[in-house]
Length: 82
Image 1 (tube, rainbow, N blue to C red):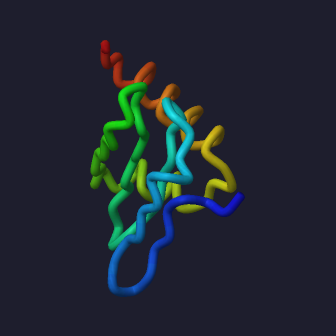
Image 2: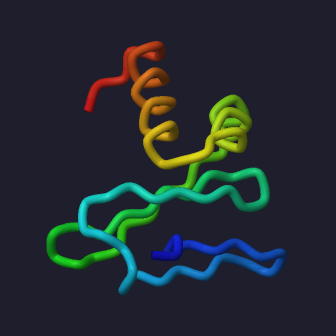
């Protein structure tokens, strides 16, 4: 299956019909990270992150599991609670 998020120089194309519920997807666009997931009610959720350190780390990842690990480490390092 193709990745449901495609970035182009003009913007981002999202194919929610190809997304698995409760799975995190990501892309980098214009030095921002976009995190997307479709919840259990098929609502599309999107979060934008501009923190330079995180953006640079995410740019070098190969898959969504690596992205999740980066965010887990960041939350622990910054002592951020849910």
